[in-house]
Image (cartoon, rainbow, N blue to C red; front, side, top):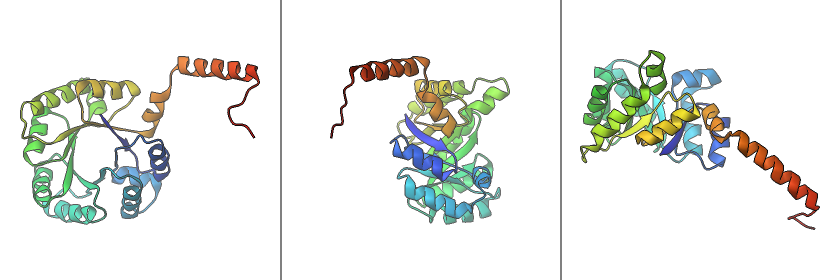
Length: 220
């Protein structure tokens, strides 16, 4: 499963990229607004840091403006994936951009029926929102399983399932178990995935044992 990070914080993106963990980035106007930076400049910088897809979301809701905005975003860098909402106008925009060779991420997916529409429109990615479904008493991960199962029955479908609204390390594991192609994770969740008390206690013991030997690996 590929790891994308869901943020517009270029410092965090650089930190995680330096670990070799990132296959891409997802962002949107809301995340960029938190940084106080220019949206287009931020997307350009992220695209310079990460070689994989960088999802940048349109701000409009009508077809004509979404299409125009999508073309502007796609022109920023070769690895931009234009993100559009799963609405009739968004799907129409997806079809038009995909026909032009633009990578499109259809977001705000909450049902398998919607995911079928995204695939039919030529989306490169569809983004089911796991955590938001959990918030209203549904099992978000069940949607991931359903979409993966449906797409798997049709070899011609190339749309990748991108598990979004991931809230915990366990969510990330469950997305992998469900067969998601990608999970987009907030930086805090990626950091959470490192943590285990036995790792911490084991490292403390190894360090203490090594120090007791009085030896060094790096020598003058």
